[in-house]
Image (cartoon, rainbow, N blue to C red; front, side, top):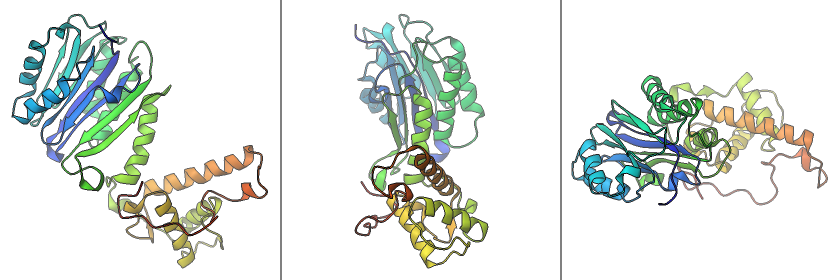
Amino acid sequence: MGPRFGTFSIVAADPETDTWGVAVQSKFISVGAVVPWAEAKVGALATQAHANVTYGPQGLALLRKGRSASEVVKQLTEADPQRDHRQLGVVDRKGESASFTGASCVNWAGHVVGHRFACQGNILFGPAVAESMARSFERTPGDLPERLLAALSAGQREGGDRRGMQSAALLVVRAQGGYDQGSDRWVDIRVDEHPSPIEELARVFRIYDLTLLEREDIATREPIAGEMALRVQRALGVLGYYIGPMGGSWDAKSKAAYLRFIEENNFENKAKDAGAIWPSVLGYLEERAQAELTRRQGTAPVQSGALDRGPGAATGPAPVSGRGSKGKH
């Protein structure tokens, strides 16, 4: 018998937006490499406990043929002589969901199946983990990534994996949703080893969202003028992108500094108008500026004048612009 995964996960679908996804946390290294499987317009699976990784590709193949979630669970587990040690959650293209918990999975082990989602877990503090995940998913507003992350957090608040925390992952698919529309992996992030993997996953998702996705309502953008221009100039000044008067006048020099910040951080999809700023960009910019100020207060200079220059300060040739709205590597 191989290693057991003490894990809790949720598989879910939002057919209205053509998205399917899996979120998972475990006291096990790199859980995202084993548990989550999903394909746009097909469905999603989570294979865990003494995970049978063949459930992933085999299950997606069955879903691709039009099998329902319950049919997939039945066919996979009945053919597996080690099924008593397996746990499986499935959601199909229509949003039907089903779960399986083998009789030999380590307590507490079980699942909660609801409308368009299934929560499952093993080696947990108790049934409240899965139950709270289900409630959170049902009650949290927003799109699928937000609801999946909320479900993970709710499960951890009830104790989660009773051995502790180590890794987490979020996989959400939609047709042509991946980088440069070349795949269906709309959101694909992992925290492979961390003392607080769910919080770290949420942090990484925030940057991923800001860099690659277009989930923000364009109506939330604010014109960069007056007090807002002064806030942006100050933050850009701290980071070394802008040197000039802090009068709140959004002139060509200020715009150029702002666009350089956008390009160097791969936020080109938020640069449709250099005269307006998205709330997410403003938050990130001001957090970076505050972190830079804190660094200057607590770091001894190695190079003369280094602490007076932010990371955006020009040190060589001008940066090369990005290839397009999806950033660069």
